[in-house]
Length: 429
View 1: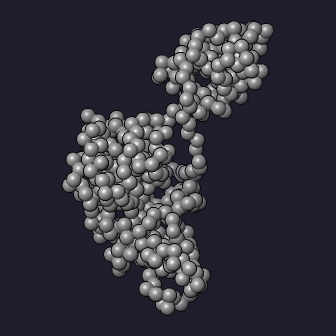
View 2: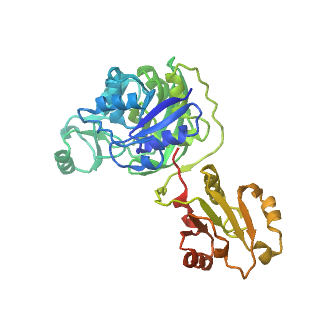
């Protein structure tokens, strides 16, 4: 039986990685919850958009109402503050929380608590109690409670410290770490065994998010991972970040008992951290079998659309539309199979035989796409495609502007070139 999993907040980078990791799993049914309008409503089919902010007084009460209404089995928190709030109030919820124990979450939510707790076991940055202790600049200022690089500053003099301290009196004054930065993705099972630890270099960072990352040699990080795992009680996925100090030694930045957005790197090597965490929470023994090959993950903004368009028929061209440079366009085929799944009829309108002398059915067979179409018309060069469009509501897809213009003027239906098909593809699951 599938477990109903509510991911909250569903628009964070963490939640989008959880969605990517679980959307094709036969073991879960995903629900996305949010307090504000965000990207989650474009990817979660079961979207719940009226949840209070985590700091609101009625947050837990409203969460329990949602748990009851949608028969939620587990909540998968996708923000550091939400992790802590839910585990601190788990007794008030009639569902499980995919998370480590409350003591671990409370320690990790504070950078100072984390450093104090782990000092002596691993290398942590020096914390200056006052600016008088600083012997060399720059120093690094960061909130005691925060995530990513939000609210962090580099201070080059005492005047900088005084300026930033007025903006945020909770800032910690830390030694500056100038070297390379790494994240180590980890998984600890219900028996406290560290089943997996994989390091990755944060090659390019934008807004505190690693947007280019690739595996690093785990050997120099393994001891740190094992010592952190011995000191803190984890259940499921967690990660820690380190950076090289002035002497090239690794120093801890943070530990987080949650999914990281860039865990997608190791997921694509066979380590599905969200699914493993669910299985572990259910008390199921798991094994991890990562693939071993070089890989780089690079991230950028990606477009998602909500098109207010209703149609039941698609008329589409073949050459330079479905077939481009002698190959099948996989994006077009993904869209056509989406149409098939939704019961939308697909009609092929092509001038291939007149242009190239080949029978169109032989061409479709060669490219192994013969069965996709509900109707096939191989029309003459002088024929107008609009005369073959007789089913409505419909849309027309063709690489040729002249073909699209003629159909638009004669039939007054929406027309699309290949590059605009992305607005018709649904990524919800």
